[in-house]
Length: 356
Image 1 (cartoon, rainbow, N blue to C red):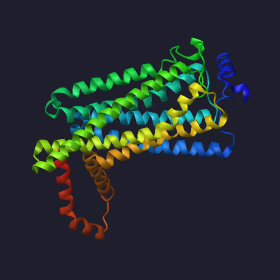
Image 2: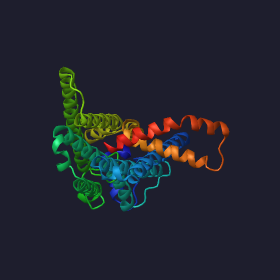
Image 3: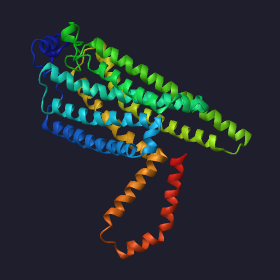
Image 4: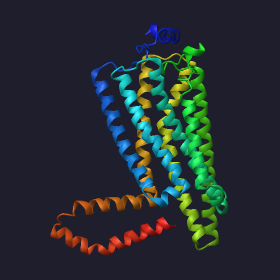
């Protein structure tokens, strides 16, 4: 392992157009490779399915498409969908099949991973800002957070994210700059890695601050309602719906922090200290936790969002009707007739929630 120190790995990587992967490989046995391949492919496929369903529910609803909150939610689903595809493919290709290619090919794939996860954080920040305005200035929310501004923020965030992620491909890498290379990522400068970590920490700090303020306002509102014994009116119901969505986003953020803290800590450690193979192996397995984040987010949306939950229920109901279209079992038919009133009530409740 001495030949894989920071200086030697830098020279080996920059001295040729084909990356020397020996200093970055962490899987030795066939069983480890099979486990990683099954984990990434299985979790990645589930993440793709879940986020595709979320996007389908939003895009097929004219009501949801108009709401800025769901435009930002769609941005997060797109980021998680891309992360699931790009990370799963890149991780398995690199660590299992040792597929790297030229400098440009590797940096392009790594840029895709960086862009998707940075965009996920950026989307969470936009969602936090959206909830912050709705709670802090509820009567000015519709005037300040319009669909046009939400789309502009959506496009601007993705453009900035793509630019930052592909800086190494544009020449900001350790070979072109002549700086020290990261021991975790081939061709990546430690300076660039440190800058990206600072960006992530700043984004997380802003998101946490926004959510902390939202929860403080929610607690303050709940205390006031209890003290004054005020009956809820439409505006207060709307505030409570915003608070519920804010709590959902806090849950999303907690999952994000739990999944990414180990990887970020090891990245910071790599900037100061030389890494042995066991630490690199730990980092590789910790980085797969990002798939857990992308997999859990859609579950949280379907569970906490009444609008998405109602649309999902209606979708499953339509599928059941389609499957029973050609022939219906008499017992099932009788059960349907007995539950007709329940179905009408469920539809009415969903339609009421969607119209609020």
